Amino acid sequence: MFENLASGFFELLTIKNFIFMNAGLLVGIIFGAIPGLSANIGIVLLLPFTFSLNPINAILMLLGIYCGGTYGGSVAAILIGTPGTNAAAATLLDGYPLAQRGQANKALSMALTASTIGGVISALILLFAAPAISRFTIAFGPPEYFALGIFGLSVIASVCGDNVIKGIISGCFGVFLAMVGLDTMSGTVRFSFGNIRLMSGLGLIPVLLGLFAIEIVLGHVYTIFNKDNLGDASEVDLRDKLELSEVKQSMPAILKGTLIGTIIGAIPGIGTGVASFLSYNEAKRTSKHPEKFGDGAIEGVAAPEAGNNAVTGASLIPLLTLGVPGSAVAATLLGAFMMHGLVPGPNLFKDQGPIMYAIMIGLVFINIFMFLQGKTLVKFFAKVTKVPNALLVPILLITCIAGAFSYKNTLFYVYILLIFGALSYIIKKLGFPPVPIVLGYILGPIVEFNLRRALVMSEGSYSIFFTRPISLAFVILTVAFMYMLTRQQRKQKKQKQA
Image 1 (cartoon, rainbow, N blue to C red):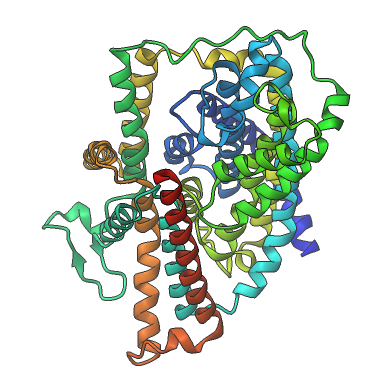
Image 2: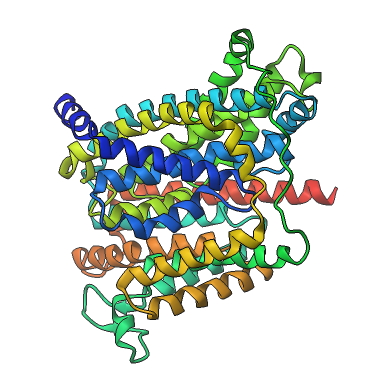
């Protein structure tokens, strides 16, 4: 471990790595600060531009977008009362009242400080926990990978909102889409309808851009005819500074939020929004003055921001060690890792040790650079919330088209992009969530391939999945996870009806 740690540290210490980290952070904060956009949109848009980069440069830039986007949502939440991301929904409860009282800079500074502390601690936990977990997962074979893939697909139920049935349908549709192209085991071409370009599949980049970015563009086109600007940001009074005493006062809330966010992040399918609200509720529950929450309590900004940024590092633990993406961002990052020859799973740290340690140490630096950028550019970040839709839409659309075209340098994938963009807009109007489609598209081939390999090993007997301890454990986890989730959703429905 220490040999890889030293190698990774020296791999990281290049000017290019630090440039790409900071570039990703800047893009992420901007995308997080614009309501309706997110870190995932930023990652998807910049993913095609990482093809020519080495794996460390590329992944560090994308992780910079992830961390910056998670923090950036607090900018819009505090300044205009509109969370840039769902992760910042709890932040606005006290952040916006603080801004209305002329304490916007204090709220933004606390959000930045808490985000940095939560992100750094989470990154350190990833650095030391992930390799240990990977040593356990080295014993995985086809049955274990299949059971793990099924567990990953069960995450669909937790990211599909209130309608589990529609989420499962979306997930199954994603699995079907993944079958388009050449079957890796038999060499048979499936669902290509005679089109030779479909032999290599639909393409991860055009599908992701279509499902997420184009749908956002279409939404912004609609708002152009109603309201030109995304919002009017408050003027930030830079004289109103965050006091050290206020940081000390908020430290218990920050540390509790960090712990909650780390635990939530390590559980696939929960996400930053849940971590944010749980951290906020815990801070309010243990506060000496809970009556101040909702009216401008500084701890009410600190706790959710520490919680949602702690998710960033911890969410990479199941992704890197098990290959299970627990969120839309993690699913996109999974695709990014695989495109750069870093296949998440048991052998990742064994085969690519120095590179992975460079990336994980880089995540610590990313959070430190986020603090420095936030302190330096806070007055400029506020202006981002005033970008007119009439300017934003063409920039996003051109970037999407360029990204899809660069996938294989052909217009065919631009058509795929537009088809999936229109499809995403329609299915969202019908109440079908797009995130399960992505999870199904990425995890479907893993499940299918390892199911067939496992059945070859067992000569067609399905008992192999129940006689191997690790495989059986994942089957039990999947059943338990689905049971608890179904029970929780039934309770929520009863409470709404009551």
